[in-house]
Image 1 (tube, protein in one colour):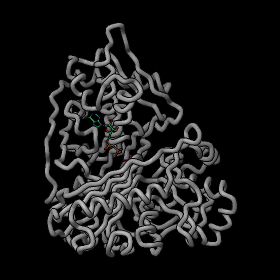
Image 2 (cartoon, rainbow, N blue to C red):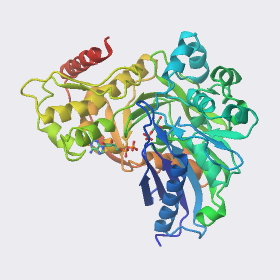
Image 3 (tube, helix red, strand yellow):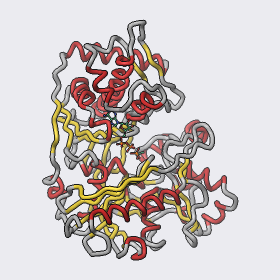
Image 4 (cartoon, helix red, strand yellow):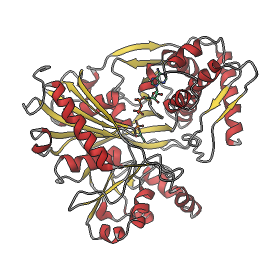
Length: 498
Ligand SMILES: Nc1ncnc2c1ncn2[C@@H]1O[C@H](COP(=O)(O)OP(=O)(O)O)[C@@H](O)[C@H]1O
Ligand SMILES: O=P(O)(O)OC[C@H](O)CO
């Protein structure tokens, strides 16, 4: 028995694993349970998950975390917050709850041709103006249409209202409530390519364009509201599900970026930099994404997002594919052994390039090597590359008219790397703040759920609970910064042909 609560359960359903974390009322971590699940790659560029496996493992982690916290079936767990990998598509049978196909994951590129065709037909402006996004296979809509076309009778069944679509939040909500609630929150809806971000409702024009029947779609709710309660058979009692948000938006909340201009940058598998832009959407002219940051009390706060597909994944590549380091943390030691990068740059376009370049065909390259190049240079180039990509995102935000941030709040696995954080401060010429709790995604989901049940009065109460671990301040001379940035841009140009 760890305590008497009240506790909040945060389910963080990510791309490679599911974590359930139990927080106490002061948002301190009390218990955690995590399980990895299978990645399916049926063809090059295709990525699928088994939604049933995700459900089973999510349920197992929720039960284990409740048990560890001493919070199982005794009334101390007051609310559940769900946060999730975004854009990933599940379609299931409303009668049985069974998915009609494996989930198509956000990384999946199978609908690249569909996007090209829609672009060639002149639809990109409508899509961008309505959704704030771009025509890219990353988002849900073309994946939904693909699934309806690929599974026999699915389109007819969808038209008849027999099937339901959801991103992972929505699917887990359906399963947790025993098939009673079909809803998603505004942040997740804003990643589908079907939401009109000004009205906050599904767009009929876009449903027609992408050939997605309205009957498939869930109700759209706030990021903090009581959506329903868990089927008591699942977790031993009925617990309200009171918060939902996409993982990057949950991290924005977990980092307490509640004022316009505040930025968080999460470094997990990929990197997602998100700036709060307040109550009107800031339209990007530099290929960033305009998206919903959170919706609370029916009021939408917007955000500007830059998404990089490969960040920590490049460090994992160094360790697993290249065997250049034994563990991820060793990259910091190796980088620190060098006075400079020796002119070696890695452009980590292993899965094309995301924002602000959006080049699905670019491939990675290691440039500037000599016979003096060592594994330390490659390790350093890998860490530097993630920093340079962040620099490109922040530059694009500022070019879009966003204010220059006073500080950037970092989190995710890679943010544990001190050398990386210090270099980030130097290249961005901005203070980097690292919170004590690096699991800010789960923290944000718990905070939203607490708001949803009225445990916290407002966002200020959440802000008051956030604690800083360390700040990194810039020390690099402007000339050195300019020289490195020039080297990066040249390397990037070799890969993108610009
Ligand atoms: N000390 C470190 N230095 C650099 N990268 C790290 C470090 N620790 C973890 N990582 C990277 O961070 C990633 C894991 O972060 P995490 O936030 O758990 O990711 P995700 O939620 O996307 O699975 C891995 O890709 C790993 O390579
Ligand atoms: O599961 P993560 O942490 O890699 O995040 C995935 C993003 O939500 C994709 O948009």
